[in-house]
Image 1: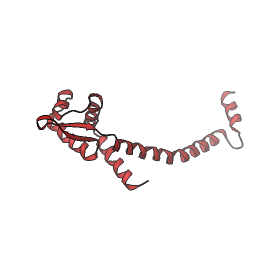
Image 2: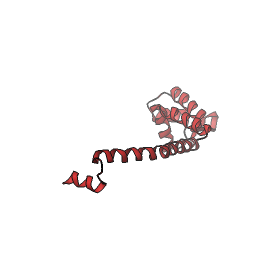
Image 3: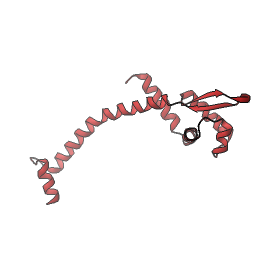
Image 4: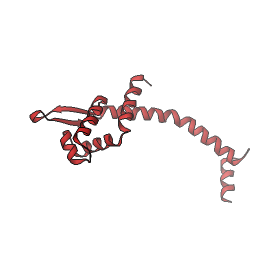
Length: 127
């Protein structure tokens, strides 16, 4: 896996680890672009705290700041970093699937006993 994908995914996971940042992203997802003041009206968080979290989310690339009217900055979601994190997880899952399936097969064979076919093992379980 390319190091840049892993680095982006790591930053996304760090950002998403905080419940306040997840709440801000959820508010932006449901309500569309908003200022820090708009988000403070919707969430039980001060505008200053929201501004700090938005700065980190912008640094990671999960939100983008857009200049608005009267010097108000509106924040909009960006999906690209989240898609990179999803690709990272999908690749990780693919890497795990083969060994986990092999382990499951081994454990199933061990539970049935030596020389037992899968159908004989099921008969013993139900019979």
